[in-house]
Length: 124
Image (tube, rainbow, N blue to C red; front, side, top):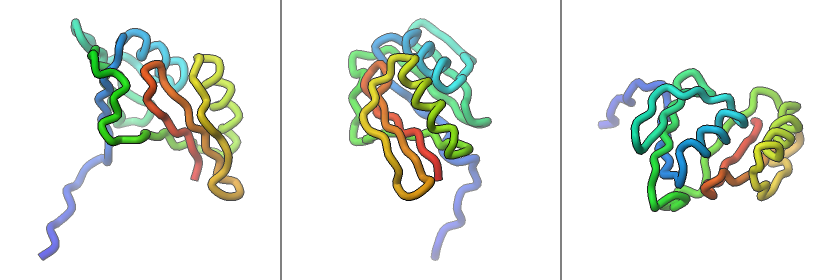
């Protein structure tokens, strides 16, 4: 018997262990427009850029340890937005790893955040 899929809004929460939550907050706010929604002594939570997205930046000595996850991605609305994405990534000091196209009209950009997490910005 195949179980009934669980109705959800999709994958909406990411918890990142970071060296400095305020540095991560500035980076993700400038690059993706996230907005702070909660703060305590060790963490900051943000909403966005999608309507149900939550990212938590938690102060930790394990910052940047991927634990088997190689990257996470943000999907562009239009392929023409890639030029702005690249400019913005450079402006916030992201390390650009690689960029190109998966196929004609399907651009991608991989970069590193301040803690070394790999982010994919792509269009499909």
